[in-house]
Length: 87
Image 1 (spheres, helix red, strand yellow):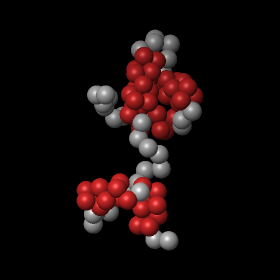
Image 2 (tube, one colour):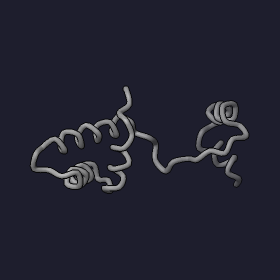
Image 3 (cartoon, helix red, strand yellow):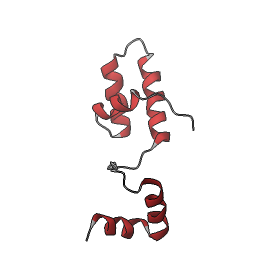
């Protein structure tokens, strides 16, 4: 089965048609996970709150937030590096 056939099977005809109209001929990167801007903004807020405490360091804040959300410290750092999105 080709990648196009797999996409059609996953998305259905209507969504595949929209995808082709919008991005036909373009090479796309497909992330492993669906973006979750609400969760990411919550992570940014939690990190900001944590770092304001006098007893915490940057790394301890990253670790605390990573543990709370079940993510790696590196992933939390990547999320925090992106500005907050309006939802």
